[in-house]
Length: 478
Image (tube, rainbow, N blue to C red):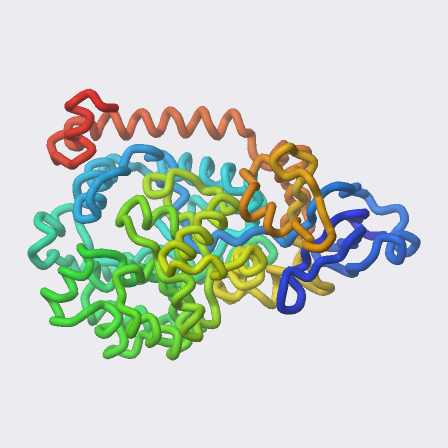
């Protein structure tokens, strides 16, 4: 007897080159895996008596969405660091808050980020951050989310960045401690939660650590067979630092030290030339684009379509952090990714709806090295599946001829509240819009309290930093 049987759904399996549609489709799930996919009338006779039978008439059934780059703890700073020049964002709007974050604050922020992500259909997150062992044990494991975690490694201390136009001050002892902590976390958590938790190493960025530490992280990644999750060419601030220290650009520097291959998951890359993006693609580097965040922080469209057009083989999208793009909603991120790349290249045919859906599912899973297990609705894969109710005014009508409009309507019309059911690893995590693994009210109450503690403590520092946003506050514009 199977555990879950989904019937009469409009399946978008992501099998094959496109979205792999099956009308009036069914999915049988047992022991966390998909055991069969096909037409309802063919499967229904074989799978009677399932513990859960989910009627998906008028609903789309998709693989769970993959948010490949996310900082969930920063959900506490939603709306506190936008509309400023890029050179100010990290040092004048974000930094004043960060020294007041405690471990408990990060845990509260992570719970809020995960709650928001699941409710909008994300089943797998690529998390980069601090205190990830405690967050994993208290949030990721009990919530049921699938997480590829990457503990940050850098040599940055409280006094490392007094001036963006002068070389940052590195603290090698901090880098040594963070590398040791990261390796310890990998040893204890890689494969936890029956495989739901996987690990990468996260050299923070080329401007935040020495060449020596970068090479040590690379050596450890090779020894352990892990990928590296890294911010790359992420703006003018980084470009200034790399030029001061090495006399070149980030991507050329990384190439010179042997960093560019399929072990690297490069995030952002919006401060890179077309030649450098071609180099990433030719070296087999995996890529994550965070379009909303970079549009808000830098006023730039990351090179997702460019990377793919130049031969890139493993691309994903990410929501980044809520003090960047303001939300962790990959359905909205898909639309923004498509629109920004179309306007960047003045080509409306780029990143069509079917392609964006694949990037958010099977291709995103490939970017994280997980496509053998998740990303499509296929026999043998882990059952990470979402069900969207299409019977909404903004999703109506459902048409099959001459164009099957389900994929376009999901990409260009969905808001997140259409997600009715979320299944992760064969477990129902959300049913009828209600999260079964987290207390929503408790999560939001704790997040509100933590955010107030941080912002009240940091208010004077924030205003003294004198950012563009602080000046707007002083003028009474907000």
